[in-house]
Image 1 (cartoon, rainbow over the protein chains, first blue to last red):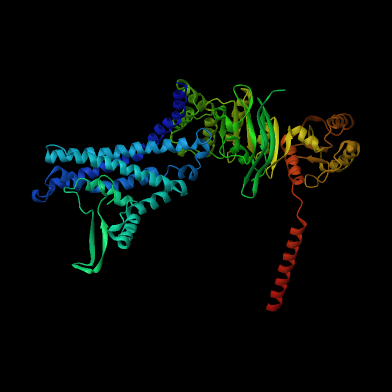
Image 2: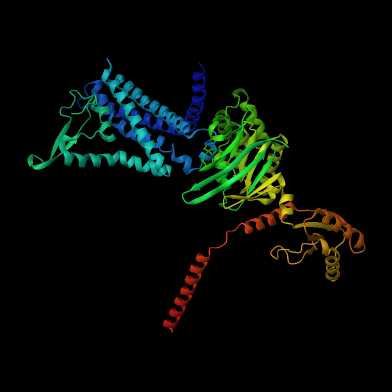
Length: 258
Length: 366
């Protein structure tokens, strides 16, 4: 009983920091929410305007198209919400006010969880709006695979958040962290993946790459699921002797290696 | 004598090869205001950061009196930090309103939830910030931020308050407000530890002063005792009538002759070249005496009795600040390390080499 009480007392500063962090980031949160709503509305409008023969055939196909934008949104959200977690305390010297009151690990955990809650709400909102749009156009039953995609999206944002927080721990400025992590997530991993595909071909699956892992959010909806999960692109189209590069499309659903 | 509430024992902090704090020993008693005075880089902030547990000492320990009444190692008693309030460096806050920030800090310090709003309102009113309660702190002036910094340090009503440069960069009015705030806290029986460059502010509010230089404490006592240790002091006599310039020289000669046994014989020329000075605008006589309290009395007697026909003494004061400045300068000078003979020789050789090089260049140009 006493241990529980001590645990609660120990967790209280984390809880206070989570609520404070949510209040602190609320402007950024609402700005991002507006962006997500605008993107969703744009997708809905574009779907409505598209000629019926060019529209996706099923609800899952509609999701397959609409969710392509979520990877970019998740990258952006992770960079904007998590880049300031550690370096801002040193950059802006706010730590001198907070650290004497609070163990720095509790502060970081509280800030991390506060921001994670916000981005999870944002991702959920996107899925809800896209889901409602899909139901409006296609009606009928929803597929369990959409729910799977949602779970993968949540796992993906957790991975991105850890990646950005890691950079925040050793980079000095918040803006620097945002720029570097965003560039790495958008281009850095893709360049490395291409090099790895060139050198190791299909023998090495780039499971280290967040850009590659994010593809599962969309590809989990693909029916049939890509098999093999990579494609070979010839340097000279139609001439396999000219050499080729392997492009990995998606990780496997279970996360198992090829 | 009241009991010690914080004790620093052989406290040392090194950053690589540089020793920022070197074997400091200090004892702070309950209800005292202690000033920590020293030049930039002397080790004041490092000492305070160690007390705040932001830095860990390389050796030595910090003892704090716990609720059980014992002095215990600060590193081993985590909860005790809530007994202390800190203002370290010029405070920087998150971009939130004063109310939101103070509420968060009060919650972190486990201040009773139902009393937080009342406490915030009271403190904001005390520091004249009530109308700024719901304004974003990023719009505050430096003085207002410093006040919020002081409020956050005392929001949980701690027993020990530790302030690092609380008046730096503030205008005179803001400084007075902060000084009054500290005095009010003293009247509530709080123990306060202030680090500052501002000798006047320190001399006005502190009971004792610890002088720190190159990471070591070079003096720790009241201003008066520190001054008497140097065997020199000054006293200012305000006179009723102005002394005309043609009267001044003979008067000063007579004064020096009569007061000679009590005057400072080893007066530092950087402080004053003569032991008695007259300031016509203020109508004040400043006398540098030997620091002995009896001498001060004798000087007063002589001025009143033997110089009755020359001037009338209306008051006399002893300026703490100028005394403290002299003590501080003297102590820092005394504690400067002896220059290394080897280094001096190398420097001289380098200087000679540069001179020779310059001469050669000149010759070549010609």
